[in-house]
Length: 332
Image 1 (cartoon, rainbow, N blue to C red):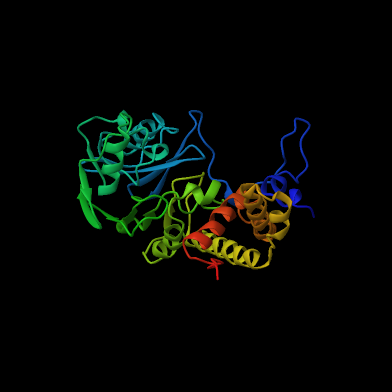
Image 2 (image 1 turned 45 degrees about the vertical axis):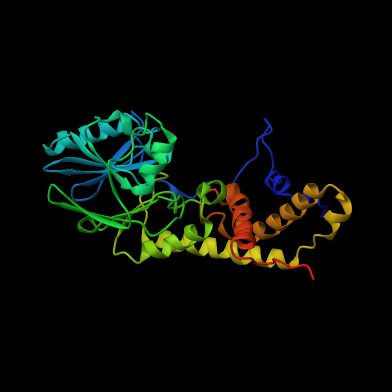
């Protein structure tokens, strides 16, 4: 196989193309799908007791109905006004208040918080202290910064319901938190595990790879039955977390093997003084060698394993090199 054929781009394009030149991918396993959406493009369902979740099939939000009003967990803009419609639907069916009085941010990213401005300015907004700092920096009117913050842990008692907020260090983002609802047997941890699906580009666009890899073990240290991951069309289980852990471990192991075996010499010889071309050729070859067996193993197990594994593998491999110092050689 030539150097060009081992690049991640070439690897991604090895599948047969459609008549329009777009690549084909493996079918999505039925286990990855969630419930059907309604005519307005969302689904709302009970998680447990008075905890509900909302999805458009790609993003997720959740809310608690309480005697003091509705506590909203994240406000993805792609769901947008359907969040309130879902709240209205449940409130009408159960004869409870539909007024959102509290909003908890999982983290500062716009794709999970960009509809928060749809709710009244005087609601209680709660998040990690880094979330406030980052939102003040970003100065996005769609994402008002939380006024109530915490550093490591905070327990909320709202309308007789308990919500435990914890920060265990940086993972997907510097401020991403664990939201535990012990009385509802539920954990919400956004942008780490996508139940039934592979992570999107570069481990869900994660900023801290070692923290991201550790986060699932922390999640499993909590007692829970239901998992809200923030993405895709169904709730997760403890088994989903375990599959994700195996997937990431296999990428890590395969990346180490590829770093040990792929020879950079042909790329250095080919590109001579063009150092960046040589670096690209070599790292693309390492990525392709590491990703290929993982793609074969998880196609049909995790949806889109054939779509995004190469991207995540590149990031994991770089973290192994740069964060862990693997294959770092000191000049004699």
